[in-house]
Image (tube, rainbow, N blue to C red; front, top):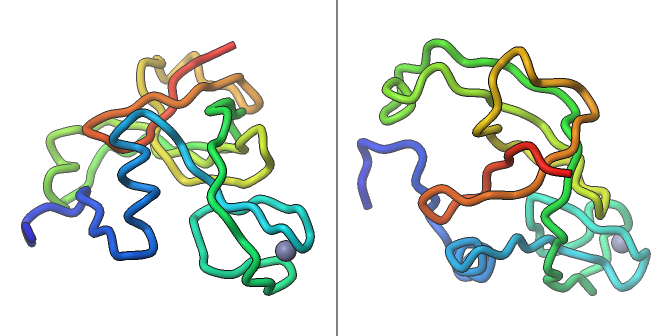
Length: 131
Ligand SMILES: [Zn+2]
């Protein structure tokens, strides 16, 4: 456990499959068999109908940009040395809205609704312009 970093996930037994898949370049979401809706971040029960009949599913990795903010200052290591970076909320093709970071895109090129695809940095999902 490295207490000095704030960007390293701490998987538990429930979220470990998510982080292991991400390390292998796959984005997992959770889908409810009772109501059919997908959600993210992963929960053990469906946030829409409270069913526990929820399983992992591999997402397409396609998304569109919902909103974003360029971060110029963050005192939590290691984010300070990454500024400026683009913190964003994206809508996955499967429906869930996800907090993430946009990479490989100049500030001026960011547009609401632009197509994105998942990329991975140090085993964590981020998004870049896609088609
Ligand atoms: Zn449900």
